[in-house]
Image (cartoon, rainbow, N blue to C red; front, side, top):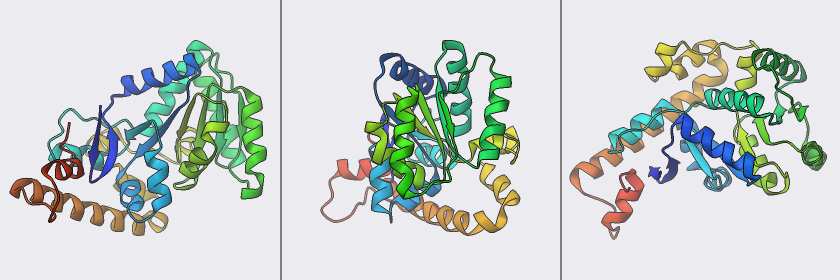
Length: 265
């Protein structure tokens, strides 16, 4: 079911439902583009029109952050669950191994890419990759990369690049890649390769995975988390006040207010 949070579309799907959508896309060879939504991406999209457009073009806008889950629940959308990018990625890789689908991995450094691919092959016997390509290429090389992916005949493409680069690549070339299911996976290959550690299960369920990551990479993440979390908290508080008081901007309909707060069903 598609709803919205602070004006951004969101698909309320479980892990199993998302995997089922991907499975159908691969089986039918029908294009399906997945974007994982977290607090940072939602906030940054509000000031980055290109990122906002790229996210909205996706066929599935999945819930990848506990902040999104908590925001939706606070605004009256029960039953939401987080489908983290790495959990979905691993579930789809397992599906590929079982059903003999061939994924293409794009991104990370060559060392991380090779290590991650090797670990995945050991974990999921029978897995065969359509291709592997590191993420260290420039704008001038993009068409060459697109051609390589097309030639591979891949059933799915996983892009291990930072935001907004992966969203831009998918939006720019998704329709020409000839790959049914496409998904950005951020730093998932670093975790699979053992280069970074994932937060313990208790931290994930408590919505504190961001704090765990911050402790590992404070210089890179501190500014981003402080800014985006603060902005999100302010926007959510304003939406809650509007919902509680029934007040909206002058001239806005009740339906428009419900869409913005995410309570329209």
